[in-house]
Structures are given as structure tokens and as C-alpha cells.
Length: 192
Image: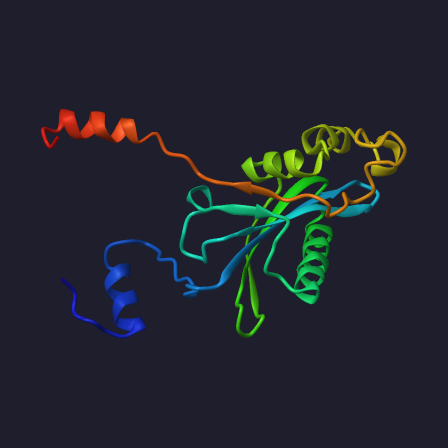
């Protein structure tokens, strides 16, 4: 077991075994927030849905309970992260659907962008189910060069895909594990 040491000492030791190392900021206890964003080639950009992991940072999103829309953000936090999401997507020039994930310090309101996924994901599917906004359909149309203003809103048949869904829903995603699989593995290993 290596003895406790400073960052330089640990990095030097790690670099003697690998060509590079990754140093990340410790964000334990921060909230994990996601925004689903859609943007077309004409710079029309909306946030379709935001979500919040009930578990703090450090628990993998796939193993965390997720609620949409977020329930613990203040109005100011919600709109600040929304504005940042739109600015990031525009800056990166992403056309189509995008997921941006944040860490938010509940004490200082400081934030970090954890990752930006310029593709549909499991979160996108949850956002579509929660809001009724057909993210995959719209993303495909946007990739083909359509504008958000030319794609009909399939929910109300009146507006276009350029309108953000109303926050009149609540959805909770709870992870499920097939624990029977673990019993079979433990039986094969002779421990049960």
C-alpha cells in the first residue's frame, strides 16, 4: 500500500507506470443535473427537458434515481444552467440533439460541465417520454438540414419543434437490477 503523499509525488509514481494520468476535481456531494438541448443549423436552440439525479455526484447516472424536471433547483439556478447549456451547444456548433451534464455545488452554486454528448442517449429517451417531445424524430430532421421552425410539433399539432415543452409533468426513473443473475453467479462460484 503506497504511503500518503502529495500530488507531485503520487503523479510522479503513476507516470513511472503509464504515459499519462488523469487528475479530476473532487466533487462529492454536488448535485448532478442534465439538460437535453436541440439546435438546428439556423441557430434555433431550445432546452427540451432538464433532469436531476437524486443521488449526489459519485453515483453513476445509470444507478441513480433521476427525476424530470429537476425538483431542488431554484428558478435562478434552473435558468442559469439552461442559458449555459444553450451557449455551450452554440459555441460547439452542435446541430441536432445534445445532452449536457453538470455538477452543481448546492452551497456555493458553483458549477462544472461534466460532459457534453452530441447524440441521443438513455436520458434523451427519458426526456422524450416525460415531455412528449419526439427527440429522435426531431434530431433526425435536424441532421437532414431542416429548421426547427419547419418541423410540426407532434404533441399539439399547432406549434413547431421550436417551442420548449411546458413543465407540466413529473417523471421518476428508478434503476432496476436483475438480482437473480447474481444468485446464479454466486452459485457457480460455490458461495451460495
